[in-house]
Length: 335
Image 1 (tube, rainbow, N blue to C red):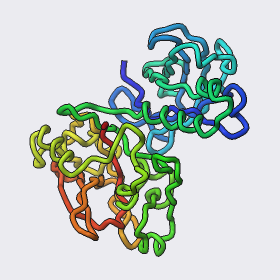
Image 2 (cartoon, rainbow, N blue to C red):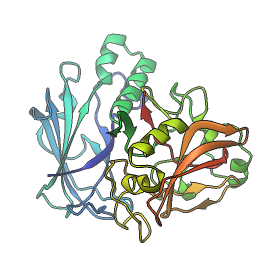
Image 3 (cartoon, rainbow, N blue to C red):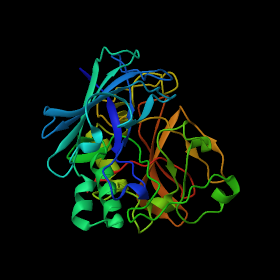
Image 4 (spheres, rainbow, N blue to C red):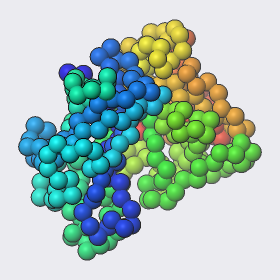
């Protein structure tokens, strides 16, 4: 069966829930049909199961929902708030075993589920709460660890790359990264910041970061990951046949996301590059749909750092040195 491309499954908690069992989990996924096309702006039928012990284990909780995808094929839902098929979400004892989230999807909005995906909850923060007697800081650290472990990834040449763009709002130590929407403020930055393309959370593929955020000593990448160096990017593109052909192997195929002709796109590497565009150093946005641009962690000179980009019109990977105030996407590499 074709898989549901899940890029985030995290526990959503507030201060009021630290002393009790969780009532819901926030879940997001990108849905593609049998032809690998994004299912956009459409109601989809979903059945969500919590499995115990293994990816094929006993279902301790099952519910159904009918969320609607956005323009990028993204669905957002809260597990624990759907129509219950079996079990009780609030009575699951997360401390006693391993658990998996299984999703089954009908892209037509019904209950004929043809797309499946399973993600393991590799860390369970509520077990830590029981041991820490309400240590909310430690609990938040475990939530962050859970987010880290669930990042989807793909392996090439021994490197494990995140297969979606980074989408965090805090540094590794939990310090918030400023969201800067004003173009004048963005143009004057010499410290880390992020934004959405066109300042619209529905319009892009993850967040755009300036290089100052990439280089911040508090760490932009989650624990266990890092922003790749210029040399690590070169290792990937060399493995894929060199810069003249590697781009096609790193781009998602078709013209649902990319402009026509999206030359050479096969995504045979699993990198799943998307054309998220960029934010200029003086504030405006450009090239959404035609270019995807990603930072490296390597500085070229005081005002510039190395980057990579893919474009719709050829199969190249282009290596450039760009102004640090630009807003680019970020991919992470396993330590």
